[in-house]
Image (cartoon, rainbow, N blue to C red):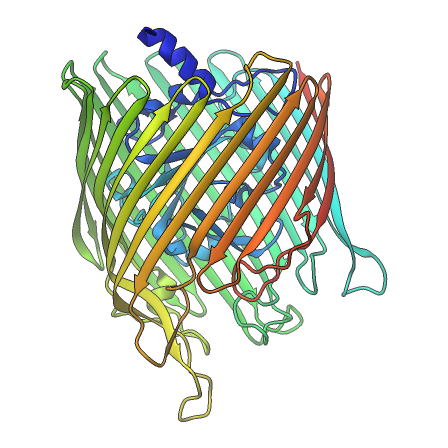
Amino acid sequence: MLNKKTALTKLAIVLTVGTSYAQVKDTTALNEVIINQNRLQIPFSKQSKNIQILTQEDIQRLPNRSINELLTNIPGVDVRQRGPFGSQADISIDGGSFEQTAILLNGVKITDPQSAHHNMNLPVPVEAIERIEIIRGPASRIYGINALTGAINIVTKKVESNLITAQVYGGSSFKDNEQSSSGKYYGKGAQLAAQFNNGRTSHGLYLGHEDSNGQRYNTASNNNKLYYDGTYQPDESNQIKANFGYVDNQFGANGYYAAPTDKEAYEQVKTAFSSIQSKHQLSPAFSISPRLSNRYNEDEYWYLGRETTKGRSKHYSNVFGAEVNAALEKHYATFGIGLESRFERINSTAIGSHNRENYGGYLEFKTETIAKLMINAGAYVNYNSKFGWQVFPGLDLGYTITERWKFVFSAGSAQRIPSFTDLYTNQTANIGNPDLTSENAYQIEGGIKYLSNRIVAQASYFHRNINDFIDWQKTDGATAEGTVVPWKPSNIGQNTVDGFNTSFRYQLSDPSADTRYYTTVSYNYLNPKVKIEDGLRSKYAIENLRHQVIFNFTVNHKNWMLTTANRFNERISYKNYFIADLRVSYQFADLLVFADIQNIFDKSYIEAAAVPMPGRWFNLGAKYKFKY
């Protein structure tokens, strides 16, 4: 029989995944990872919610270039890219809409109030990411509004040494460029990271650039990112952190919003984000952490191309947030309490000028005083200046059946308030509805988990019910004036989803062996039910996945590594498709070289709108690390 320390050590081995450097053993022990919930800090191994984690080792070994592409490897996450190479993507979880998923950076909400189409316009190069946490199910008790179906929290690296990292990569489909008389479609990128740590202070500066002439007509893109993270820790009880990021993302938007008439469309999105926070351990039992944050976004869109001002629109939005979180630890329980405020405004040629305020507060606790049972319960109270009061209670239970088997149960409610686009947009093809009410949901989920020294497996079932679900709808035909009937959002009633998901991670060899094998398999099934009136067309209600299968396999032999990432998606409103990617890499001391093949079988498929995604794509790259 294993003692507790031995069991945790083996669990740390179980939950590690492939490494990007063949000579370095796996470093991410997931059971020790603290899920960043801003209040009660709960290790991954004790979580009773359905949480997925993409570790730094996962990120380095997968044949993907952007955060959007990385998320396609996570079960339950539906990535609908309007453009390749990180141009734009809508992210949803377990059958929800892209507006119902909260996006966070180091626990700070960065959800865009104009439109969730810009949620993934993130000022963080992939090189700056430590891990990505995906919380499935209603997360409003944790993060407040707009975490109706889940949340994605991007955690940046903690600077622990003096290090410079440089990476370059480039690739092509080797298909002819439609916009020039000669040449092929291509893409290239570079990332640079500089880290400095002298004990009390640490600094990390990350730069990223990517550009491509596209994969078809008018899909060229240019993306530049800057991210800084600094920490000052005068002693063990006090810490101050500040970060800043900026991204300039521009791309040809052929077919993004109004196909086929938007063939010449172009868009540029600029986002700046900053935050400052501190943490103070005022006593062995009590800690407090205040934080300020700001997100500014500019979105400029040319419907007929940049050569004319006709059809041009500009949007400016800003979100300022202030919050304070505190935790009190007692021998029988841990309590979390906090307050936050969020001020949103927009000035737009198509939406107008609007402001709204949001105030929230929470109280929760967790206890393990009952043998084998962990209870985590609480409630979030929210007030919005347009939509009034709302309360989000929630409960998570975890029961240890045996040393390896654990039963988990969670229940909670959540809310999603309409975006400014939902409420006020005024365009020929899209008309907002200022009379919309917020979406409200509840969800219950039960499952079982199995942990051994080689296997991590789980299976769960959930039921979700959304009242006043918002969908954009229209009728076919023309208005009395002869113009096309515009899309308009409305609260169409109930949207229910029943889902089953299972995942299996197996480590086939001893982690200290020269040759190591890792495999993960996951399957998700969703059964949504949405009532749509006869004669109406739906824009978002029936676009979610029905079947999703993900299979990844890695073999790591000394300095060589090979990873294959495969996914099968069957979407309700589109044909199914199977995509297979491959990466081969070799480590020369401090230099890593790699080769990728994406979409090996050259499958034609669409994830969103009328944008065909790239076919087979070849990519070569190198990454160099220098310690000083």
